[in-house]
Length: 188
Image (cartoon, rainbow, N blue to C red; front, side, top):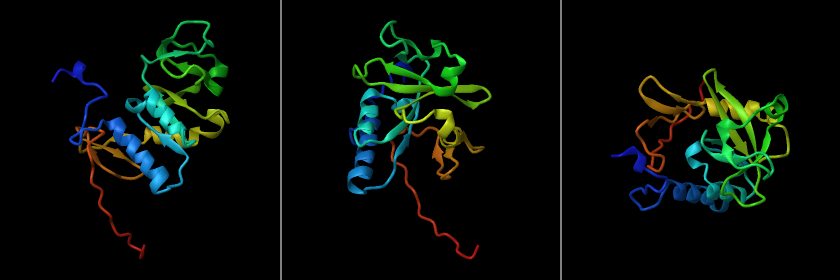
């Protein structure tokens, strides 16, 4: 299959896109299960305008890495949009982030943008919708390990180390995954 023809609109067997599934899951967690949570960590694949606004509607905070080619404005509408990877960063911006507007988002919708060194060979541009504190003052200990936690195991599986849930690398994000309940040995 021609890789350039794949889009975010790829539907699963039930006709829903992976973004539809994420909306359904979040709606179920917030309105039906009433699970108390305040932050959503997501991959660049999920960094769409509609999903970001959807997560904000129940007043949740998201941390969303942006792809290098994502068009943003850090000039306050005085310059044209530019790629995230072409932004200039001074010491203050590196420490406290930049306020940006992502192209296609509502006129007054802004997020902060931070450079997060995920490994020695990779720096991500992460856009949270949380303006209440400096990123490095309060979030690095929570976000950076979560971003680093995605890894490839020796058996060619992507895993989430905190939860030890193996997922085949070939699995599409909208595919359903079965989880097994296990007993906790109380004798330890």
